[in-house]
Length: 106
Image 1: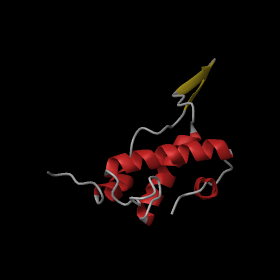
Image 2: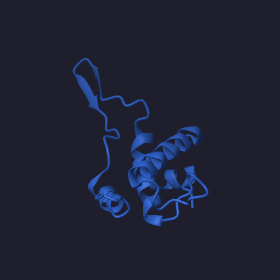
Image 3: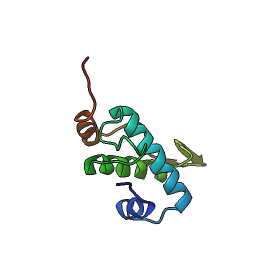
Image 4: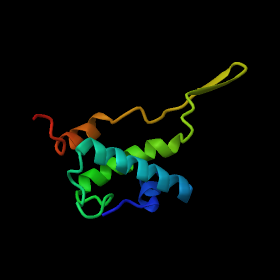
């Protein structure tokens, strides 16, 4: 099972460019695969996720990545300042899921 750009747009509640959504999903999938050391993924298809809870982690983290793709921290124009959110790592609910797949001891 692989999350699609349509899944990402539905989760985010906004339109996301197809190319941007695809790149965010791929990056999030690669990070999840690396964190879990491949657990929860199909061993014959590198980026195919077998577990639905890992799909949820990919979609939620990709949503944060696609919201601020250039990772701008803030912008200032005269007296106005805007601070943007960005992907700064996994959230606690995401970590709770990821830790169930990661081997943490020798």
